[in-house]
Length: 209
Image 1 (cartoon, rainbow, N blue to C red):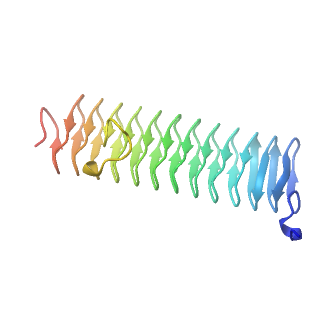
Image 2: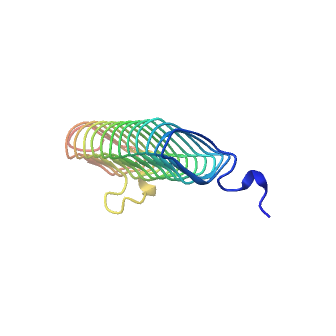
């Protein structure tokens, strides 16, 4: 027999109309058109949000969804946090699909690696552990601890598989357009169509030095 406090549809606090909570337990809904499936989750404000996990939360915004345990979405529109402890704050059409990934602002970006972070920009991606992208357009961090700061179409890590590259750990690109840093600890500073694949080298012009 299911304990009373774990019975679906029981123990919920619901304020607003058009909400679905028949499969929720000990959860809270405030707003309109929300859905919760899970235990001890909360939606506070906004419209048309969906949670399908335990101990998850959505605050404000419109059309956000959370399916990772302990994950959260705050404000923004059509954002999704799908893995454990993933967080999306603001922006639109962003996806935090890595464990403990964080995505703040911007649009159409994906943080899919564990402990990755994307701050602003558009169509950016961070796919490998501890990778970071800050701003810019269509920048990608595919190496562990790699980072891209601004610019457009820059790539840190493996340009082919985008699955993480051991040789490019801690590589960094700052600004510029269509640059590639694929060497361990390599750095590319600005410019266009520059590539640095050497160990601990810095690309500032025609070649790594």
